[in-house]
Length: 324
Image (cartoon, rainbow, N blue to C red):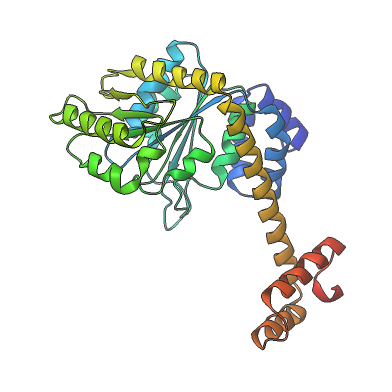
């Protein structure tokens, strides 16, 4: 059984599914082991194309991901799928059951799918998503699909991770108006009108095109609008073509390097947050000193910044505030 970090990193680097699954479990637990694993894998990542897929509930995102995965596999791509689901209020686990809707694609040996619980995170992504993407990238998956949880109003966070973001809409759900309210026009590089066999699909496509034309004349990349019927697989080749064209644009324009830099910055920010949290937890272990710090701030003898500096300085010395 693999428990050693180096063995796990080696197994993931060779694309072993068992190692990938164990590594994702480490990351989801938000343990020090998981954080060490992400740091070890990050230099090995950076080759996969990461595609974010977002949109309101009911537009058929999971079915689209399933069909898109099958089409990508037909082209020889290895595909990793991260489906960020709402969390169960009882267990904290994912509750939408995307594995059921994606059963056809996840049986393929060239596909690895994992549901991640959002655990109440409002940005549409869980904290573990960044680490999971890094792991799948290091494991050699060519394309990583991230299906986000939100209703289209809190999906901007996907831009921190994805190279290409697809916004999925459907006729008859008021998605053209929803898109204006949510501001998701700014985050999409590709727009999908799914369930295009329904009445109103052409109207939805025209509405999105009109809003894009009004708001994005200055952009070098004008987002394509693609009509699909995910249930039958119609339009998947057009979606793949759009993804490949956008990737080429990112490479040719130099923007791909900027995304990698943004991911690196995000990794550093997470490390700083983790370090600060550990410093605080260490301070709380000495209840006497911890209470004294709080009381000093409460009566005005010190401010919160003074208390924070004492906590950080103590952590650097390897102990709790007050020399504990």
